[in-house]
Image (cartoon, rainbow, N blue to C red; front, side, top):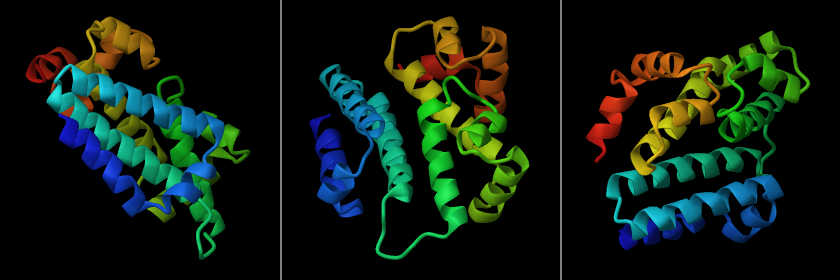
Length: 184
């Protein structure tokens, strides 16, 4: 398990100009990255291999999203900047906000304009990115905590467990309890 953690840490400098990148993270982003590492360390100590692997993937995805907002040697186009900000917001707030309208409001954009920009730049709908982020968080919680499905449903901002179960099954092909059982 320590190898997984060491691998994740060793890859970060290769993916980013690490010192400059970390210095330019917002306090909120840095706090979230540190929480990822704390959670990953706990999973490793508990020898939860599958959950740790999932957490490394989630951490790397989040860092890649942060990187989209990192000043680069070549300037990003305005749509690329918007998409980077959008992806960062989604990763940070998907557990409480599930609508494109909320993210558009945070970016001071019209929802239709944000949808068009994301679709043209990233070749996918903004809702797809929200759904993917929710599923990543759900899988992480299901595989690495003892929380009940109801508690996970609440944490992820669903009206009730039934809505969460329907959403999870539509996205993954498994219901949450079957996924949780498969990860043990």
